[in-house]
Length: 192
Image 1: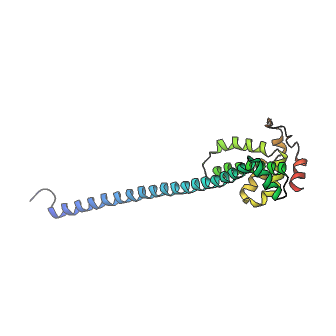
Image 2 (image 1 turned 90 degrees about the horizontal axis):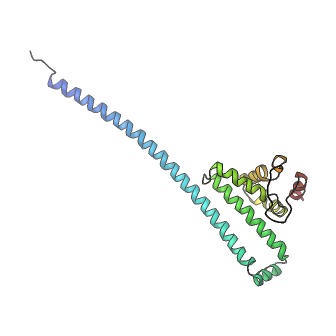
Image 3 (image 1 turned 135 degrees about the vertical axis):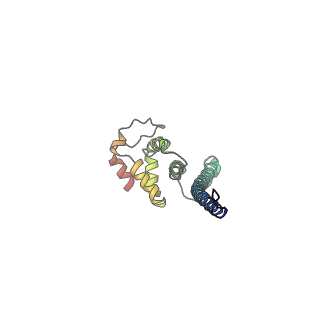
């Protein structure tokens, strides 16, 4: 009688053990591959969002540069406003209000695309609220709000425009223009 395992059974047990190890390794490989793909998909989404934010910012910056070129060239400004039947000072104020609203749009798009974290966005909203306290910005917003996306429009109307709770915040006025002082005044501007 021989002691030990027969060679055929030993080979079969060894084959089962190797198959088991290979199966476990393949399952682990599948999980790590799946996790890696999830990370890559998130990176692609973030890169797409970043690219969109950069593109939006580039369009707004190009727009701003174009109009600053006109605003900073008095003969061109005079020719442009006269040719289009515009009051020069009113057009300057309109463009500045437009630039300010577009700056808020850039911040909002960057937040929505996870470029700006929520903690920094809260500070940004405080600054943006102060911009929307100025009549010229509110008047311009009333004229152009319908061309903006629904989500941005809701953000401005629900979180930035003057509300009673927001009206109590202490905000230093950066210019000599008086900020809006009540919801009544804002409603007149928005619907007038």
